[in-house]
Length: 93
Image (cartoon, rainbow, N blue to C red; front, side):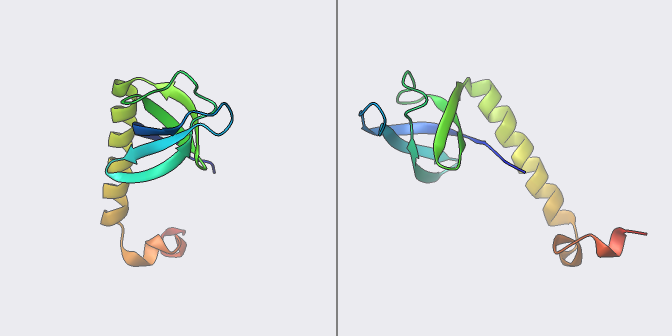
């Protein structure tokens, strides 16, 4: 399964056409991301990132909604016993 995660651009580091990159914050975790596919994205914009590439701009409401879903998933995972995290063998009847 592929997963794209929303993040906010906090700095544009390079402005080259194909090597445009910047620092993107994912809830406080900052990573360098290639911004070549979103040439109109700038400081403060939200982008969807997959394997180090920003694929599209999204609005802040959509980004925050996605982050809330990720938080809920994490909360549910924490409620599952440790034996289930390694597999669902105990729950398959």
